[in-house]
Length: 142
Picture 1 (spheres, rainbow, N blue to C red):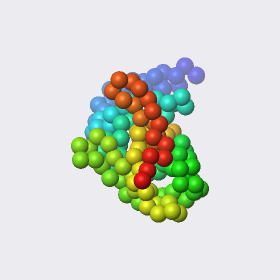
Picture 2 (picture 1 turned 60 degrees about the vertical axis):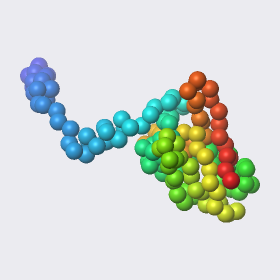
Picture 3 (picture 1 turned 135 degrees about the vertical axis):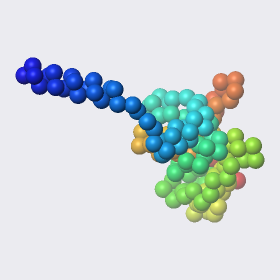
């Protein structure tokens, strides 16, 4: 039994001595995550980011709160909402979404980008200001 424990210890020490290198893909992933501007962690533990061009480029869907806000404004089921286009602002510090609804295409402001536990980035309604104030942009579309 002791011999097996010594073998495991020596294997762990050997693994620690092997130099660690990032692959090109890993380096790009680090670079991409560095361009995200972290704002907060919500009560459930999901990370919330400023909706800059890097975060907006990762959006793959709508958060439940955000979809509910748009759904309520236009009186359509949330499951019918689909992102048609993501448009970064001229200064690249925010973006807007073109969302297909049963009542036509709507341009909607987003407050932030949230990363859920599945690793998906979603348009979200939470917005944080430089002075720390928080607001929700549910259904701010035209």
